[in-house]
Length: 108
Image 1 (tube, one colour):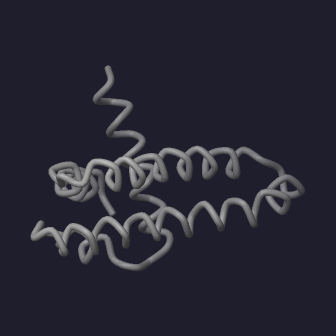
Image 2 (cartoon, helix red, strand yellow; image 1 turned 60 degrees about the vertical axis):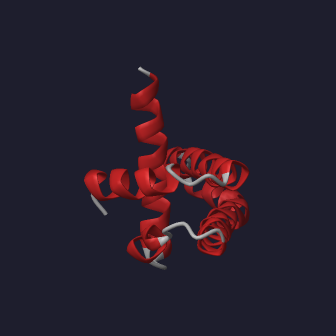
């Protein structure tokens, strides 16, 4: 996934009127991306200690993607972003990091 692809997907998510579900997904992106950075900086012992929590947080992120997309469809909104995002766990994790980056750059 490229920054541009992530930006397009984030825009498609951001136009949804489902504010609370959208906020849940964005929060999951922020939390997961933070854990991913901490995991990268950690030594092997700490990584082993973090692994279950990191995986569970990743699962919540994926669930939040699925919940938002299902509800967007139910409300007649375009959820094509979910197909573009796909099911690869690494790609979805990368997307979370891009969202955190996009938000950080937007705040500047």
